[in-house]
Length: 143
Image 1 (tube, rainbow, N blue to C red):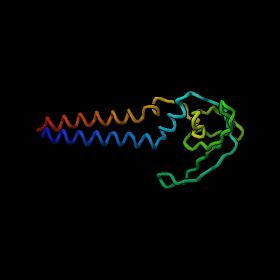
Image 2: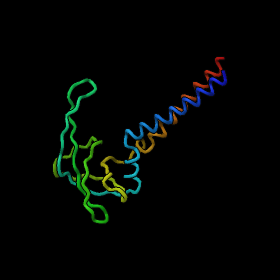
Image 3: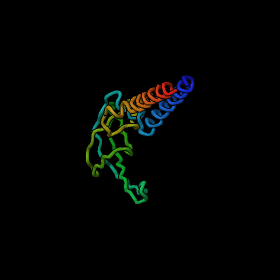
């Protein structure tokens, strides 16, 4: 049974790592971490709003509003981007703080840095690995 437990552990750890990566990409973790990494911020102005109607998981219509924000980088370039993954819904003309990286300011975000977003991949992977370890030990002991 020890061999079965070892094989289970290896497969489960692989699944945990893949799940962590997938969740991180889905939550746009790499893009957000890059925007937060340099600590650059700017005041952006909402220059337009686009609404989109989609179906919710229950089948009903849900309306999402995506603001287009415009800001100046430290080196004076004007950057415009559409914020798609934020709960922020500014009115036209409102100012908001954006976080951006100098290398790619178009990947700016209004989302403030948070522990959960910075470490989502590690937390999910660690939880999956812990579950895999406990399960593998149970499989090995039950023999």
